[in-house]
Picture 1 (cartoon, helix red, strand yellow):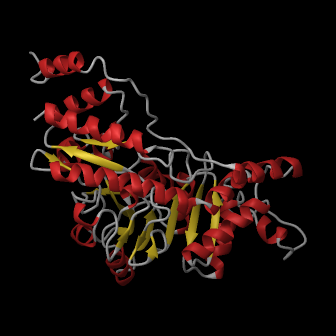
Picture 2 (tube, one colour; picture 1 turned 120 degrees about the horizontal axis):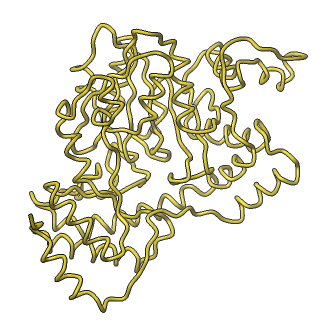
Picture 3 (tube, rainbow, N blue to C red; picture 1 turned 180 degrees about the vertical axis):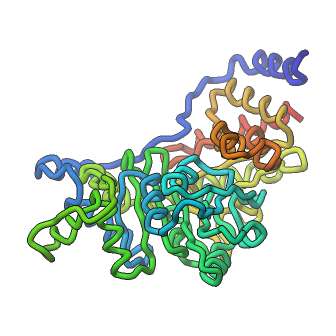
Length: 409
């Protein structure tokens, strides 16, 4: 069977064969001399293991940003989630609500403590959960909710937090993609009992690998418990503060402490994160301005942003982590991808919904359980967004997208 777009794709190759070939990176890290200085300090001082001066500086920076009682740096966003689930006191038989449309780490953290992940749908135009979705899916076995802020954009997280508090549910914010984003003036990650960040190399601000556990409003005992969990089940951090003469094994823990060398990199990143965020926001604003007039029932530009007010509103301020478009059907999405490949413009699909994965099947789910999430995977395509894109790069992306959309009508 001949694909309906095959002839058009071949024609477009011939028509466009003399066009100047460019190659764009889908993602590039943006580091400067400050990051290099801090990392060299760590090397010269011989402080490359955990809990050094750079780690402490980063934690203080984030505690101020989130107005949090405590922030603990971790080796990854995944480990921050694992710590949050351990600290939640969950056990076998307890259920945790989380969206199917998320990265496997969200569900793996639940499984790691012996609880059961229960997948729920997302709001189509934001790809995140809402308070209404949570209310519709809660059962007598529900003990916690993980709200994933997809792309740095959230739903009504304030109402989610209120509902969880009223119903004695632990609220964990998976804000892996959301550092810098705010809702009603409050940073995402500061609404729940726990907030989890990622500074993986694919994020806006990076430490290669790394994450953070935010404890917005926690008792002294919970903070000490978190410290022991972080430090291999010992009270070493109390020892380092001079509160006791030695330290010992006190209970379960793991090695979640990141290298101070990587925290030196992150320290420099955090000192300039707003500059990079604004550059990313400018890229997305250009995408929206150029592409929004071409939206129709054939092509939907979601991204959690209303094109009429770009990427901020009275409630939401986005960190501009990503930008995506959604095609009206799977076949057209595949054709769009081929066109963009021919134009040397990198695009990316995103999460294969967890319920549709091999592990989801083992947990008893079917692809048909969440039809929207199953379908969107093959219609959603992310465009390049990073702070090193030039104006000509952005223009080339826009023109290629418009050509691809027109050719696949």
